[in-house]
Image (cartoon, rainbow, N blue to C red; front, side):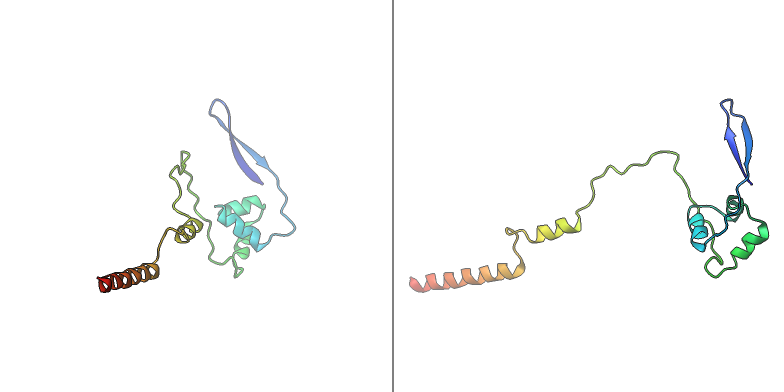
Amino acid sequence: MVETRQPLENNVEVEQTFDTPTPETITTSMILEDLENGVDRTGIKEKYNLESWEVKQMFEHPVLKGKKAKKIRKLSFNFIDDVPQEVTFEEAIEAESNPNQRDLEDQIEEEQMESKADDFNERQY
């Protein structure tokens, strides 16, 4: 049985109970997903309509042993990232392959050629 509280317009809460049958099969991945979504052992007990001893026995399984519900904290406001993203990897590669951009080897080669040209011109005069 799952109990939920539904707020009414005049801010009075009313408990509603729902009988949900226990599933024929419950998998460890189902329980892990519940834990990831912040459902604790009590919530799992209620969700699957289980007895306390059944939940205890389930959590003795090696995959579930010691696992706890993830704490999910929700912001009370919408938080939006409005800053442009940093340069992507593809943009960085493209910048490196820019034909106007020179690397160290090209610069050394150009300096050596200029030096040889200067030497040649000095010998001419």
